[in-house]
Image 1 (cartoon, one colour):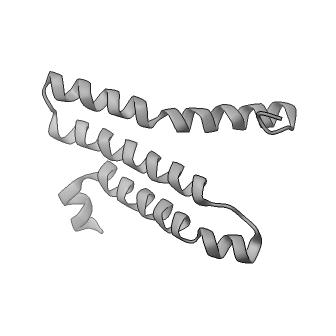
Image 2: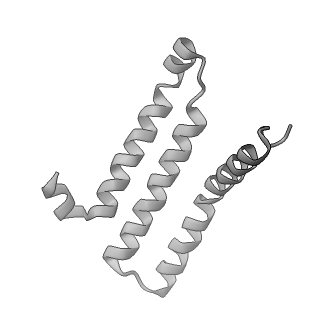
Image 3: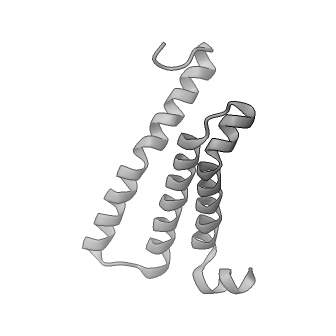
Length: 103
């Protein structure tokens, strides 16, 4: 693990672990549906998106890209964060009202 952290950096290594967890959760959706009636596909995709955002941030911090590439990566992070923002908003709404968003 130390070699991996030394080679890629802390953020990129953490993003690999997070994306792997999300991918496993996504792939286990049929088993979770059958055994516990729990749908985990959207949650797995959100976790993979979070890992991807962390990976891009790690690339920005380690490679120091030029202005144009930096702008493109920041726009990509913003677009990938939209589902995460909607999930946070629906969670806050649920915690305040006790009802799911949209009902």
